[in-house]
Length: 212
Image (cartoon, rainbow, N blue to C red; front, side):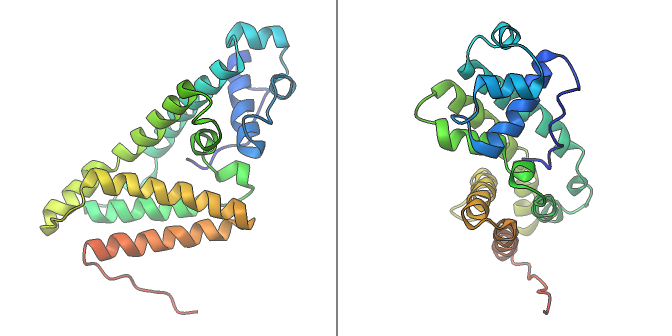
């Protein structure tokens, strides 16, 4: 979810180095293609150290999703989109912030849990559920601002703050898939522009389009 730092195996203890190596490798080539040997090499630890920490590759997958959730929670809590006074402005600032961190290599800006759950949802319920807690937990952080914006503007409809919060994540995760499929991060940024327009339309706020 956040704009992650590059994997740095020299930092931290063996567990932390393995988790950081997992974040980098899984986003770069997927869970199945990431071997225990790969992780040990990247983290500069022995295979014995790996199995002492995690016991199995599946346990590593669950721990990686939880580690990602912990790091992204702190990252987004400190992000500047919380600063505007108007709750709708905060929601729109969130979308703008998500767009701003789509840069660099795919493994640097795409979401670990989104990448992981697409691949493993049927094969490992434990990893799937850990990814779900991360994705839905992050969506829930937007609900209070969306609800406050609805109340301030008298917005009522068939949709709810919870459903719109979840929709933002559907767009973002889908944007990452489009960017990968087209080998173009610009496709993800384009999707975030459409999300901005959609939210503005829901709340009756026009968007000033930039002229070429």
